[in-house]
Amino acid sequence: MKFILAFALACCFSTGDGTVYVCDSPNSVAFHYKRDCHGLNNCKHEVKKTTVSEAEKLGLRLCGLED
Image 1: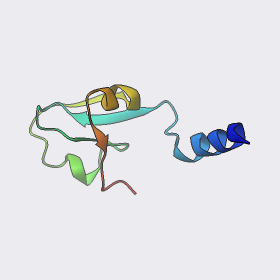
Image 2: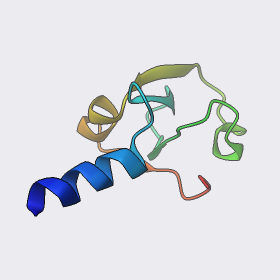
Image 3: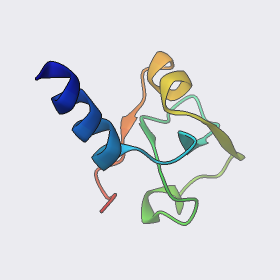
Image 4: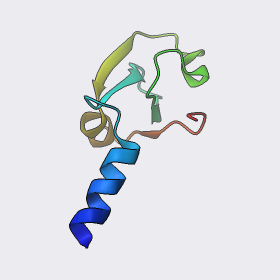
């Protein structure tokens, strides 16, 4: 049962290869699934591609504007 639940959650929340986007700023708090997310509009630094696990290791959370 736990395996089925884990598989279902992985299917629903997966972003394919796990790629996310982050603003390369010391003040960043979130990662974004879409490069054109409104949450990245104020980024004055480079926007970098990374993985969810790497973003979480940096202490970042999912952007609240993701739909």
